[in-house]
Image (tube, rainbow, N blue to C red; front, side, top):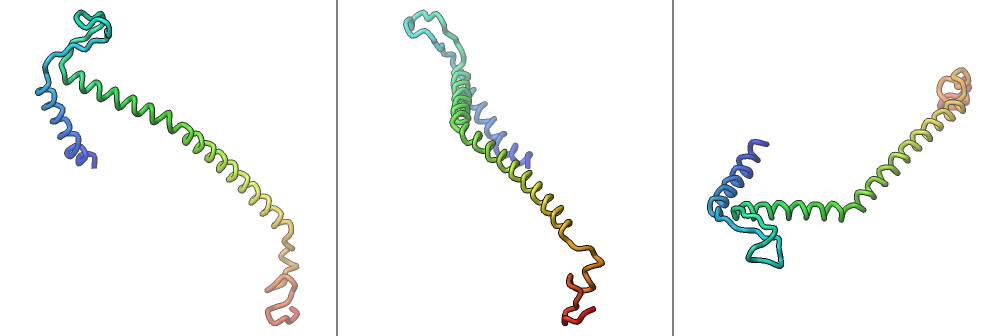
Length: 128
């Protein structure tokens, strides 16, 4: 399955990135100085494809972080429900153990039961 995924998705995506990089290899200056556009104080000169791909990567990271923080209450609720379920399972196991101990104490001894039923009579109510 992994080889199929590589062949169908990763290889064509890599080819698209290579073609994009070759087509957009012109140098651009990215300025971080909003007041002086002629001679900016903070500026970086990079190939255009690096700027575009870096912007896309930063956008994906920012979107992932926003989604992560937005879904925080659902993860918190899931943890709370899991803790409740764990507590209830433990309580149920304790109750079952207590019920089996009580049931064992209430059962009459095997000698008192008779052959078929507890009161010493068979199915036709004949005394044994």
